[in-house]
Length: 153
Image (cartoon, rainbow, N blue to C red):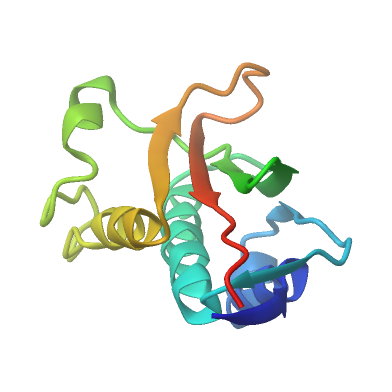
């Protein structure tokens, strides 16, 4: 673990996909503040990378001219709560019980490990990874990630 600026870490992952984001004309909402946290940056970026890769795939299936991906977070007490959302086609109701299972995928040529890896990494960080309903109904798919911020030096 090292001290990182969370927003820089998020931006680094989004920058990897800049061409695809621009090609699909996706509106991105990511925080621009500077939040210093002590965490495993590689694991955190892997979480964001897997979620972003999924969003880009599913948004590509849509003819929506107003495509959006949003990543927001808040820090409460000793934990961070992160919301990762997109307005793609959403997850079919019958698939919801299986989306975190290894090797379950609806992507052609999908391996089905992305969300499993995210869940494992969140667990290792003492956290929780879940699919939730976006109360604003702006987004069809919204994940919530919660993990503890430990002040270990």
